[in-house]
Length: 102
Image (tube, rainbow, N blue to C red; front, top):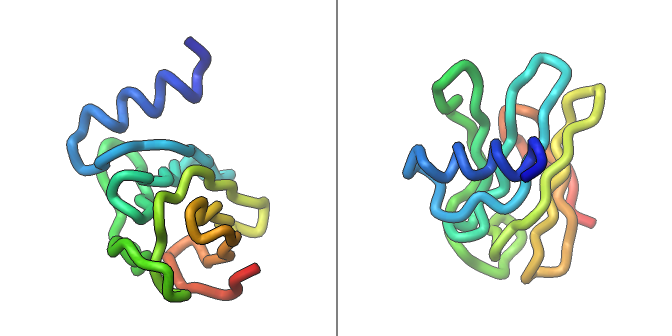
């Protein structure tokens, strides 16, 4: 099992994530989890969840997610989420403010 798989398994054990499917880590060590089963994303640091404004409702309208399965964070702390079943990529600030849908 690689490091990412192990981290996703541990995150799933917290029961605040329905199905951890993707993981991104920023330069400060915050982990961003794509929650495919919960149709949203979570930000995690130092054994605690950080409140963000990402939606957690399934839907095909622009503000919602449908089974996000990938997440990446760049050095400027922008978060990119693969909104899998809606066939789009969304760009957010690290606090969850939506900037763009591609």
